[in-house]
Image 1 (cartoon, rainbow, N blue to C red):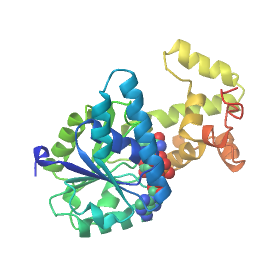
Image 2: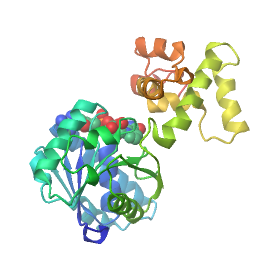
Image 3: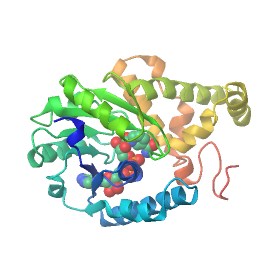
Image 4: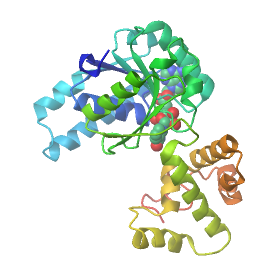
Length: 291
Ligand code: NAD
């Protein structure tokens, strides 16, 4: 259909990523229909978008009046069928394949046949998600980074059946949102997690084997390699359960033991020490600042 005719973007799932995608879309002058099955997720997402735009106003990046206009461009709904009029849809529900397949089947039934259905999955196969629809050529991976309004990168991931036109439309949309798209093949982890997760896992092995202390390992990577955050602090930020599940997907997908998750990572997840979100991971966040 060509990206120039896209006016309204549907976003499915109003969590951390969906809210961020909605904000980035209105900042690029699109209208948004934001859907979540939970009303409270929609309320929280609208609050987060309001705060995000207010910060932009305070920094001089947006006029106060434009902020009001932008917020009014977001319509929220708990009914998936309200996405029927959308010109492009990005799905960002929880990372579970059966759930995503069910959502894609419903979107396929409800949206016009030419509409691109994109998924923000970080680790699931685009090809398998596309197989839940009768338009696999219009299904694509559109992997935003967290926090979406700040991070420039989008991995665009064509599945086995994705058409060239769909990939081109998705790249064009990413550019219109002020992002930098890169193309990745539909293989486990795409480019980002294929490179990042083994590094994080190796840092955890280094800690596990006593190669260095937590702080020394993170300091080597921040001061020695100019990473803005050490790998152990980054693992806490992403969530240790998420890191474990992505490593398992890499190990299973490639059948290669080089991706085996460090036993220490598994032990921390078993203990419920999931990083920032649980108040404790490699660092302790119970007093606010990491210790
Ligand atoms: P989240 O838990 O913050 O949000 C998920 C949302 O999906 C929740 O609001 C939940 O209510 C909603 N949801 C669940 N079932 C639903 C249904 N049947 N219908 C509609 N909504 C439903 O998760 P998140 O961190 O925003 O991640 C969402 C997606 O983005 C996942 O696929 C994840 O892998 C991917 N992703 C996450 C990150 C990250 O750093 N958090 C980065 C890139 C990609």
